[in-house]
Length: 198
Image (cartoon, rainbow, N blue to C red; front, side, top):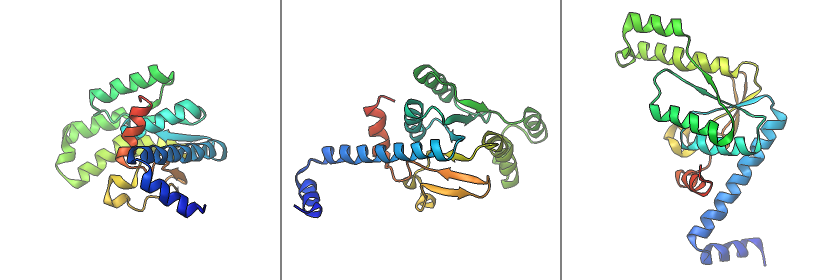
């Protein structure tokens, strides 16, 4: 029986839930294969973890099977309490402590003193300055000396990410950037979280 005929029979008679499980199993295997290649071919590599649902899937995969990939997060100084709680839970569950990068305290103090704590709402230049000191500069430090970085970005997250590649050269940081979950759906993310009790 040809593979095409066999696949059409499977699609016709296999319950949707079983087909979804097969699709997810294949996507997990692909993500693991990519992470394995990154760990070998792009060491030292790091994973930028913001503790969202996608990032928790990658945390589970990396902490379980790829301990050579460092996990880090940016603490902008404006994170919700739930994020700190999740950081703690990740450490307890996986026995790891993601490396946390903070903005330069003097730069933040000067910005707040001159413009106020919520000045980023006031203008585009103030929003860009806030983003630069709280995210861009700490990310630069987190990526220093690395050959690749990994993100939880997905194509389905936004129209602007529709052409997101699993692997592309990040010219801004001079290294390879990977998105192992690029083709995952929201449903698949939550199916993985439930199945693995992440």
